[in-house]
Length: 255
Image 1 (cartoon, rainbow, N blue to C red):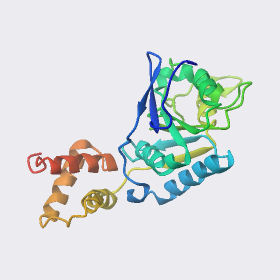
Image 2 (image 1 turned 180 degrees about the vertical axis):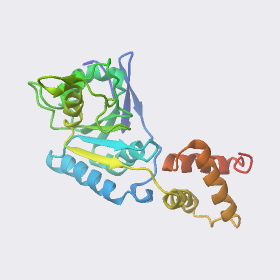
Image 3 (image 1 turned 90 degrees about the vertical axis):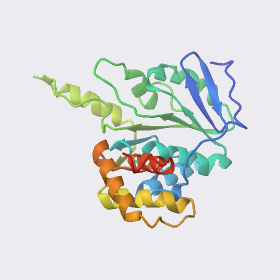
Image 4 (image 1 turned 135 degrees about the vertical axis):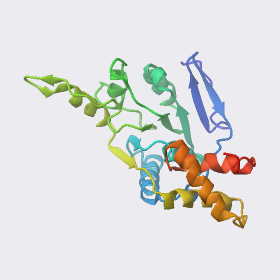
């Protein structure tokens, strides 16, 4: 890990590849934080925590959990765009590579930047090893470097599937182990399924982002967008973004 190069000045983000190198990213595609609909409280919490980290070496590890497609990962990217000028950098690591975290911490702790280690869509099955992550977050001999925080997203509140493994002495031992992992994140922010109104507001924002007027056939677009959401089985920001991509491609009337 010590000979791994990441151009931190020009690449505001990086992705750790399992073959053992960091792929640097110069441009991160994301919306601004102000363009997210109905997430004002969540954004305020994330910004306050990130600013405490950047300005005071404070802030905590964060778990964003809840409904799929609700904007959890997009918020992390938007945070990077907002604070990259404050020497914030984001390194994304897939869960199968989490064993490399201690070496990554060793490599980054002396850098003159602040780092968010981003674990996207983090969840574990019962036969997967998550002990290393639990130890890194809290509980090992070595404390988390002052210039590194872990931000993770998951569809699961406790990161592992719910089950009960009853023990005569210790009760539901399996559930306690699951909770011990999620408890390593002092700040847990929940994201919930949106209603039809919020879904259409998100869709409407895409037209506003382009400084264009809503089409005269807006009612028909909304009807098609609701049909599309029914086909997808969910009304969330990701579904709205996908429908807008279909609209731009001229396919929306054919679905």
